[in-house]
Length: 266
Image (cartoon, rainbow, N blue to C red; front, side, top):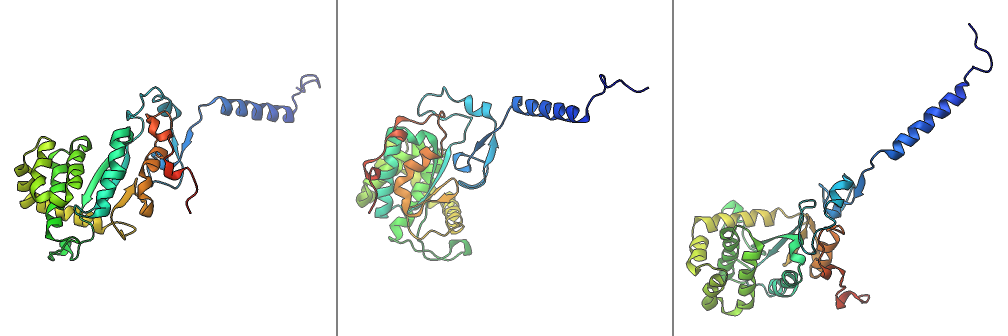
């Protein structure tokens, strides 16, 4: 039976209504938030953007400053260096130590891979020689052992490394005192360094240093979330702060521009 013109429905009108309804549903649906990989995505430090649940980010907005949260992973900082290297001493005392004083260290997960510019390939069983002599090989093992003994807890092992840097010219007499400063006996570290565990840690450091991509061209060599900083290692605090989204416990130091960066570099 044919409908009267009054009851006939225009196909165009029906299509318009369907499209309008779809737009309304799409607008009301929860939308994901884009988070750049530099801010802790699952791939490299910088690159393709990934999706993050908006509620995950908002859940951390009330975090106290300087307190890491489970909503965002800590920024991974890998420091490749040498125990008797003057530039690595600068890295420890002038770049890293301030981060532990101003709260930025709470945003990072720090590792010190003490090996550096070594001649010979330990991974092939070759005899090695360290850049600053046999003592450097010895104290590299000390640093690697200290991290292992102290469960890789940077709040515990960094004061030891800092002491080693401060006493670099007199470690023969001061290494044990540095160990005691973090609640260890000097023999705890020397036994590890001179034994099989020290050898294993040294081999691990050799493998990891050799696997760097790009290869390191100097030390200190700093890698943040898988990306090498090269000559920009002194700006490590900026990279850590940038890699931590707002609302996830950035300390006030992240908002303070260092004097060295207030003006263009020549």
